[in-house]
Image (cartoon, rainbow, N blue to C red; front, side, top):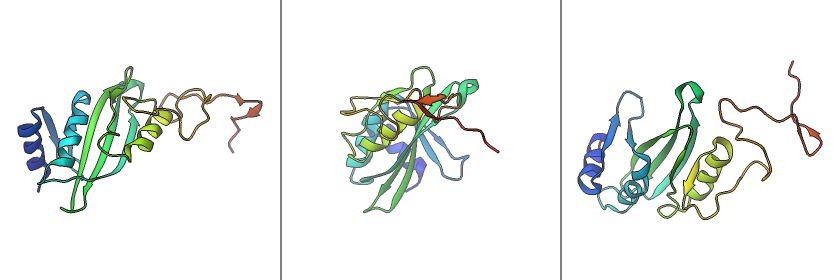
Length: 162
């Protein structure tokens, strides 16, 4: 099944608008942030698709100039052998979208990582807290304009590079 055919099924059965990007080597379906949970629920439950595996969820900061962030979902259907890439574009000032932990339990740690490193907020996530950085760490290290703190609990964080 092609990405365009999957997008058509989404539009027919979930009744949301999606966009297909075939310019990238790995084609992707772009979904509005408010629609991501219901689209994911359909992709997992529809018998023609059965995307039962969230392989990866990645948060990306496109920087202050672009003023956008994006979340990329890599899905796999074990029984159908389909792969699919979903993307949600977010406003950089309010990177907020629904959690998909109710669809795939694997989203729990992926969403926590995107929150910790990029600063995205996933609504209805049961335990949205840092996963790699200490709880009292300042900022989100993978934001393009991140400025690392000089010291953390008396330990020098910044160091001079060669």
